[in-house]
Length: 228
Image (cartoon, rainbow, N blue to C red; front, side, top):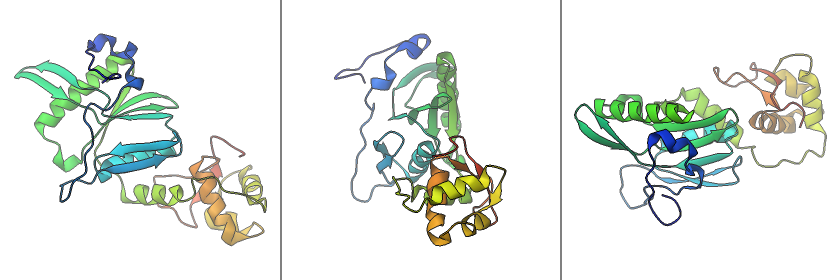
């Protein structure tokens, strides 16, 4: 949907279509006793709220915020395609502009993916490839990843550093990784420093291995953005 009307584009020209100015193809709804849980997720990286239709989609939006998406569009277009059994339609869940390029997303728990879904995902993958986009189907998350991202997001808003703790933390990891617990204990105020480590991790001034649960033994090193 562009402005107030529906516009059709061939897949081969989709990359040049004004997709980033589109509105959701299908509007989100809230009603009592519905089977899924829609809502709005605020993203620091875009500065506004984004609609989601399930908790799985909300988790993806949180991850996209952490990885610095500069734009996220829900249900950006409807894809009409032909297949061996006739015609099909599919509305991808999100189109995101990431630091490394544009990514088209579908979200579906792995145990709920059926043959018809795979057909739609294959069509979306082909459409994305024709535009030079990446395509990802999010089937689930490791439990500790969602827990860690939820924890880091608690300090994603601006945080005043009147005690200069962030400088102390950054200086400790310049020469190499330091365990989380040791990192905060070597500051002037360890209890408060924990909040600042979390803030620096969210904004990628510091980095950790998301492949492991976060604890005092987790190694922390200088992130992509370096000094705040």
